[in-house]
Length: 381
Ligand SMILES: Nc1ncnc2c1ncn2[C@@H]1O[C@H](COP(=O)(O)OP(=O)(O)O)[C@@H](O)[C@H]1O
Ligand SMILES: [Mg+2]
Picture (spheres, rainbow, N blue to C red):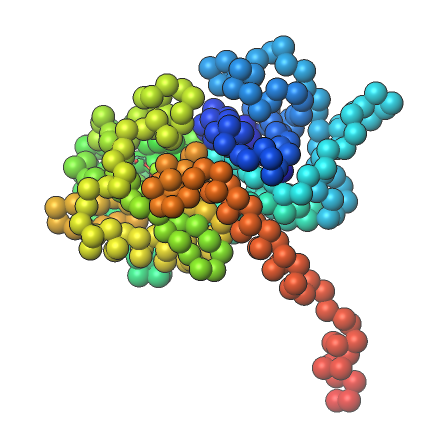
């Protein structure tokens, strides 16, 4: 079992935490674990000790551990990685059966890694290319939700070059369609990085400049400062299971990176966030959120696992889908633990689902016999 983590992402450190949690909880009697670390420059590395938290100081890789650069194979249907530098002393290619991407955000959760794995025919856990890419783009996924009749907050979006070309027009659109406060986000990022609330035009211009420094696609949402947040996880390929709901506790109007990861010590990741599990909401509201979550998962074409986050006015029982995380921090194990799966059982189930999807895909046709075409073609005509 290969577990891939790190990568070129603002959530690099969060990924290290998720991977360490997997290493600590995976059933070693069942699985031989191959940790694959992608550094912040994008180099794939293997070596002893990568599955130990001691190898990371403040979640940065300790210099002295000896790693070798590897790469994906250039032949299909080879679940292995190959040392970059050949030669007599080079290590052997490292084979594995299935890969767990434990990577959050860009180059891991966004479909790019999934594309590479599909191209090389490597079985892997979790969402495929399309769902991962949609799940990273907060604007694109909203369009899908709206089309499925799922509730989202009012929003406006634009590209950075459009903002630069006619800021006044866009400001007017935002002020008439949304009004202040607004929540300004880069469309493709995570962990609250680059997200700010703006209560007036000056703050909007500042927040847009921040968002623009992270992504060229910018999302402006109606700001809901008093809103509660409820998250729920979904698991499956066809028959979907849904977890209990959680209510994360925030210290600010926006749940910050610090709230999410740094509260209970750096090593706990999403598990350290203070939260109420199950969320103290009515049975009716819980059902509604769980139903929306399953519909969102299906609509985006997810498989394996995802966590769907909602903005909820608990008193008024008003619900909006906020965003999906196709590789949830810590695999949302703290939700599954309260929903009938221990962490090791959760990993088992995700691997099963990954296999199931791989096998099903293998059964589909990817080429057609040209004779078939001749039969339907114009020979007789
Ligand atoms: N429309 C909104 N109004 C008020 N607060 C919001 C809104 N959207 C998001 N937030 C706050 O910002 C946080 C991060 O936004 P989110 O869309 O979840 O991005 P990320 O992918 O970074 O988690 C949320 O957890 C929530 O606290
Ligand atoms: Mg979020």
